[in-house]
Image 1 (cartoon, helix red, strand yellow):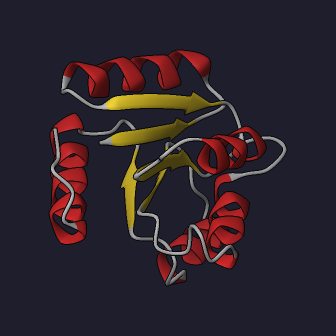
Image 2: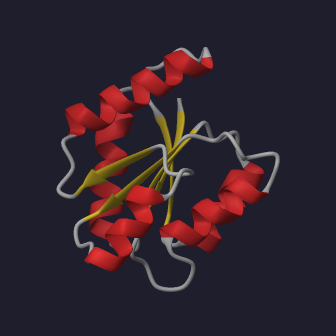
Amino acid sequence: MNLLVVDDDQNYRDLLGEALRLQGHVVYTAADGEEAYHIVETRDIQFVISDIRMPGVNGLELLRSLRLDTRFRDLPFVSISGYIDNRLGSKVIKNPNVDFYLSKPLSLQLLLEVIREKAMGLGVQPA
């Protein structure tokens, strides 16, 4: 699958991207929501994994932009965060547009299961 990993922490973004590449996925990376949206527009992205808290365009704003655009309305989206306060947490949990929420540090195995499950539902052959 073509995956997009969005995180403002370059080390985390690179590490997660490499782990997913080793599982056979094509991985694109972005440092914020604005860069991520541009990648989604110009590449055949099948799945987005995005940090929530980022400077500039954060993960929830990215998600909102994708859901408002009919081209990307159904693009699977996993929200991730290592730090989430009660106010932001309730926004994520109550947001019907969030397909999945995972806490950092991520379990790579759990993330791969989520990707595989969503891919099968879309009729896409996962890596």
